[in-house]
Amino acid sequence: MTIETVIISLVCVISIAMNVVMVMYSRNYLSRLINASNVATEILVRMDAYREHLTKVYETPTFYGDETLKSLLDHTNDLSAEMTKYEALYSLTQPDLMEQLELASEDFLNDDETQTTQER
Image 1 (cartoon, rainbow, N blue to C red):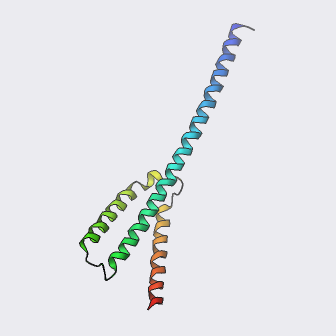
Image 2: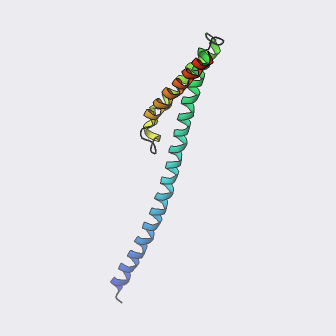
């Protein structure tokens, strides 16, 4: 074996080792990124459900006009709007998240109207 062959073999082995390390690192990083995306999506879904529930409570005759509840509702709406701005950053796993939230909101409102009608 000549020195050139040894050097080329050594460079190839080092290159393969570095590629294996980079693939492992990329896989680990992507799995953490997808996990963070799922968690952020869950937070946004829960925040939207909380906002809807708080709006319904505020609209009941018992609590309508309560300043504390009104300020809490305003704060929730502001926070929800702020989180929605970043939706494109963390919706890697669900690119159509906003459409799904709107559909879920409509279903929630329709179910509640049906339940209220049935109670009367």
